[in-house]
Length: 313
Ligand code: RIB
Ligand code: CA
Image 1 (cartoon, rainbow, N blue to C red):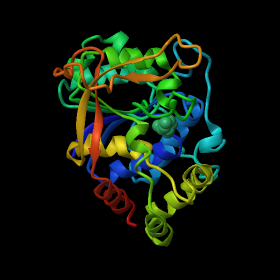
Image 2: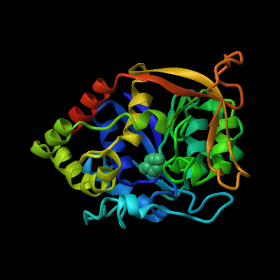
Image 3: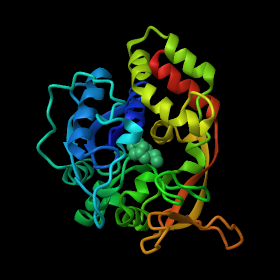
């Protein structure tokens, strides 16, 4: 089991990540929630609901940042539905978020269990940025950090150059990239290669397992969004991939690159600018500020199989 804190903006693929983790050895010490796909209170409600459906009613959920550090709140209901769960109308969990706010809980847990906890972030990085401001030692206190974010050398999705989680709070993302930790950024350059095959989608549809049936309901809205993009009725698995690589890093190989977040570009604010040129001496210290790990290769078939097995599909 991997003891982890999941920071999320629970929408559809965040929900898939929670279910992936539940079926692949994640022990959720806590979930923390940020603005992003939906307003933070909706994300918190959704996180509680999905955890209950995953058979994890005891996992505490801590609400966090309601807006980015230096720009107005923007949300993405067009991708995730007005309710953030594909407008499935799932009965919300009766539970309410815990009293401690997200960033404070991340710091408290990291101090309480130094070197033990893996931090998985699959939403805008505002909570992580605040936690770094509260506790500059955080990089020494966490065991691993895996983030779904950025678009290294490929187009964005929230803008021409910005991937949503970085684009929704560039200042927070810069704090995360500059922190002296060994951080893996699982960006669109690899998540957009995780398109489920029609046969895999059919396995989810055909399964009698309640987890697969929940996912089948959740992804209908997502399939509607991705069908015109991908040219067939399927979807990609952004957040589940970050969860997968947090739990089983050996599913991929990695590359150290220098990177930064564009904060002032008129058209490029929110872009993760990664130096992919490869002719400078490659960075060797993953904890060097401004150095991140990106995924070089991925065993996509094994990732898909573990995803489907986690659903009983
Ligand atoms: O760019 C994809 C990311 O933005 C995913 O985490 C999705 O849930 C949204 O938050
Ligand atoms: Ca997300």
